[in-house]
Length: 269
Image 1: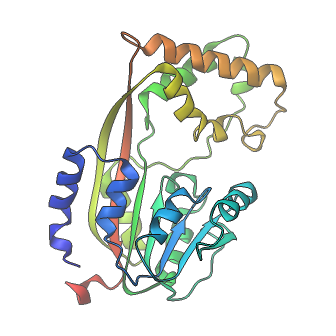
Image 2: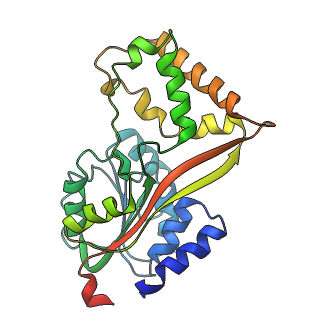
C-alpha cells in the first residue's frame, strides 16, 4: 500500500461526499486476503460489508451482548466470528492485517490501553483506521439540544447528575500523539467538519441511534432515572431539532476524526 497518496485519496472521497464509514473503508484498502478485525462492530452491518471485501478471517467484537446477538443472527452463513469483548479486554497477538474502527473510538474508557492492545493484535505492517466524533463540541446540533435539556425545569435537576462517558480530543495532532505513544506511525490524521441535511425527525433518529445510548444510560448518572425524565428528555430534544430546521431541513454538523496508522511503518514505505 502506498501511504503517500492517502491524503489525496481522502480529499477525493470527501469531495464526493461519501459516508464516513465508506471513506474509512476506502482509506484502509482492505485486500482480498486480509484478516480484519471490526472493533466496536455493533450489529455487524459494516462487518458484513468487510466480509465482501476479503476472503481472509473477519472478526467483530463489541462489549454489548445485545449488539453481538443481533450481529450473529444477521450474519448467519457468512463465516464471520463475533465476540462480546471490549477493546480494553482483547488479547490478540499478531492476528490481523487490518483493524477497522468506525464510530466507536469515542466510547473507549481507556483509549491508550485499547490502542496498545490493537498494536499487539496487528501483524507487522498492519494498519488501523478510525473514524469517530471529535472535539467536545462534536455536534453543535446535539449540544444545543442537550443545553435545552439542562435548562428545562422537567429535566435540569436530574441531568445535573449526568457524567459524560465519551472520549474526545480537540485536534488531529492530539490524536496523532496518542497513537504514537502506543507505538503506531500515523500516516493520516484529520478532523473534518461534515455537514449533511436532514428532516428534524431524521436528525432525532440519528441522535437516537448513538448519542442517546449515553445520555439516557443509567450507568452515567448517580441518581435513578424514571420514565418521566426519559419521556421529557426525548420531547425536549425532538422539539429542539424542530427549532433548528429552516424550511423543514436541519443542517447537521459533525466534527469527525479520520486517522490511519500502521505498525512498523518505516519498513513498509
